[in-house]
Length: 171
Image (cartoon, rainbow, N blue to C red; front, side):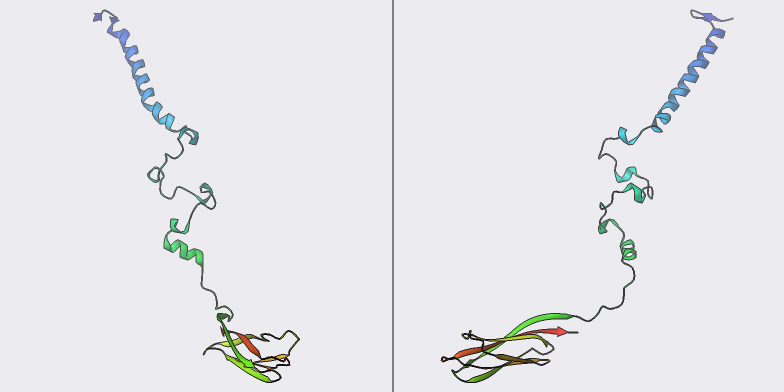
């Protein structure tokens, strides 16, 4: 038989077999390590979109309130909106204050009228005498598109009768 400084060839066959088994074990140990890596082993902020398989994240994986509308496809946002409901009840819009005034002589009566612009109706009206603080009566007659105030000046001096009308589009 052949011999060398380490002994016969027969004695080295088991050594070669053991070395081969060790090489095979070391080659698969990396795959085994990959199975035991956890989130604690990954530095925060290093996982990117490329690292996550499509359709792999679920609702429970995403913190509430972190997604915005821009994060979704337009079709998904449309699905969230749902169907368009029936029209709401008519409302009021286009508020506008219209005022008018007329001078009123001492011991005399007068009236003043304020009209809403086209397409608007009277919602409310109020009238007052500028200088009278003694309870001078002012009557307001509010129609659908105009309001009229009438008053008598019981004072010894001239005064001014004013009316303020709130107009709006009513639908």
